[in-house]
Length: 70
Image 1 (tube, helix red, strand yellow):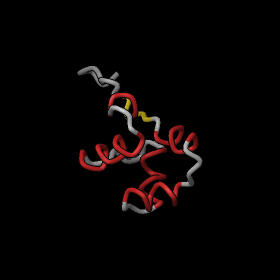
Image 2 (cartoon, rainbow, N blue to C red):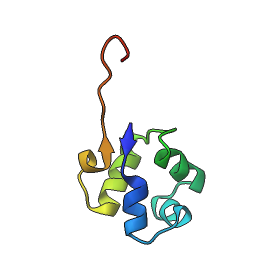
Image 3 (tube, rainbow, N blue to C red):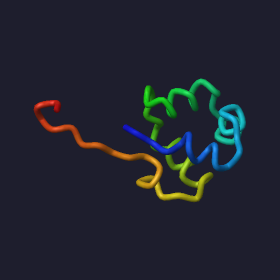
Image 4 (cartoon, rainbow, N blue to C red):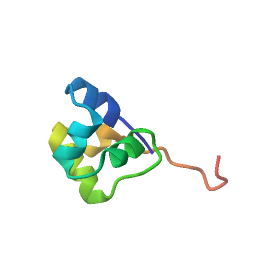
């Protein structure tokens, strides 16, 4: 799933460590979310949305995969 976490973080002037501290997770978790290697739990996604005061669908960009995987 693509997301806008990196862009929103940079707009806020925060480092990955700053964001991690605000969310109560590790910097590695933030890096993994930003690079698309990890999709956050629903509760973490909601905390991210609240922190950036944005709806989840504006932060996390769902791309449906067809049944054939393409």
